[in-house]
Image (cartoon, rainbow, N blue to C red):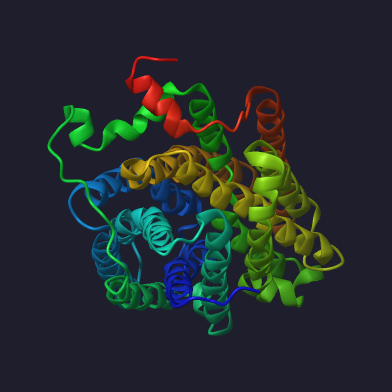
Length: 433
């Protein structure tokens, strides 16, 4: 086994902190919102992550490509995200009756600066690896594993401190953001291109959209958007769904109903193993098969939730958590690596931003708002715990059916000829097919 280099350890710590910031609230926020009477608004708190991802990652990516080095931009974004998240926490802790408008505004400003940091963190890592002569497909996944570990540690911390039902989860996230804001400044410098040549679109960094001129890449981004619909559904409603079993006498005293965050953390534990499979799977099967595996894993993720419970059906919830690692990472991490490999150096930050727009932007926004409408109709409109449980089952099966349809369409439409999109872009610029 090759020796771990200092840069790998430094990037692992960066990834750990990046996802620890998110893990502090992403899974448990819905549970807290339900506890203060905002259950019917849960979807908006998750959809806004997609809404800001429509423009913030692209804008920040453009700035990182052109003017401010990516590691410095990462620091600035985390500083601002931490300040606004801390403000949301102070408001929630000091206000007897939390109002949707105020909490939502502060939270939105925080995630507006946090969402671009995922792509920036990738760009900083890819740059550092390349500068040290390390292949990104081989060396990035083990580094990304530490992001999952950070996410898990945050989740478990929030679970066992009982922060999952109060605003201290937001405090935890803010503190971690401040730590990362400082640490990001120690990362290797990332190049910028300040050239004034080229068109206005090029000056704005919008040339990443030229990738849509390449049929294979256009189809890839469109299906990434469609699969992005699934990304935030279990994050939004998984915790409150599992916790709801505590209201049914048969399951009231079960461990799972009392420790939803800890149970769901199995999903992230699964990720740590699945990420390590990505280099082999990408090289052996290619992006199409890897994406198909992810899509069918989403079908199982939702289906097992629909069939399981915290009693005798706990094993089904556990299976759902296990397949989540495949569902999320085979799509998110592989997609990021694919985009990195298919774009030139001057486009990488912008291309990562474009990938975020299509997945966590358009896809997640549509998916979360659609999920909110479905859950509000089938679950929160019901007046008894038993009726709500039946509504949860129906909702999870609807989500599973959607993922299955997307998988089947992708199977027949997407063609991966493994040619370089970078070369194709050059060909497009030269007015060639």
